[in-house]
Image (tube, rainbow, N blue to C red; front, side, top):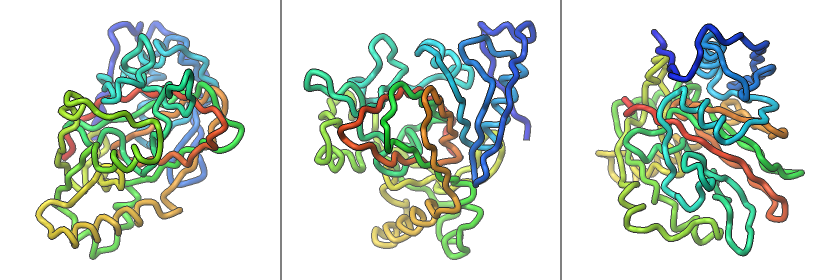
Length: 301
């Protein structure tokens, strides 16, 4: 399948020298690390094409030692497409609405970021008409223990799905809504503010295929999650619940997972069309802060 590479009007193209990038695949069902890349420097079209291809091949890329500014993170993210603004505008990085602060830090009695982000398995913004293409999360402050992020390969989940489940869900659609577990999360933590009418209007329920085709590679993937998927359309409620529970359990089998243990200045870039992810949790007394940008994708098909 042909892959259309995004361009950036400010990029100097072939006049920018290549960087000594090494892409090393992890020994597992997904993921690779990118070594020798400095996103604080201009990126040539050749290097961008390599990163784009690696992202499609490995689904999650770990960029090591990225000492970059929010502006530089935003600029790199935009090379893949328009950015999406999270509905919880309370946790935007001041001066940078494109950046969601993911943090458990409380200052002056107020949380500075979304501290329970990723509490349930999910694909970012699957509750939008155009869910996310991918997300980039840049480490700012890491705890001495905990704080890992888990990723599940939803292509493998589909490829290994038992026949009876394939037959039950292929061609069907499911409802996704941001509000599915919002009240439950509010009870657990201080990080979920009451939503305004305007915010609720931004997250109306949507319907997407249970099995989506990746728009760039053509590979099929399961596209349901415990966080945002509420029901399979056209199926009795009890049957829908049972099917979703089986799909969720199968998706996160150990052989489908990569667990990322964060290192200082890591930036992790994952494909929301191919993966789900989960925050493993951080001890309450240890500080954790990361900056997230999210790239708009396509209407799933």
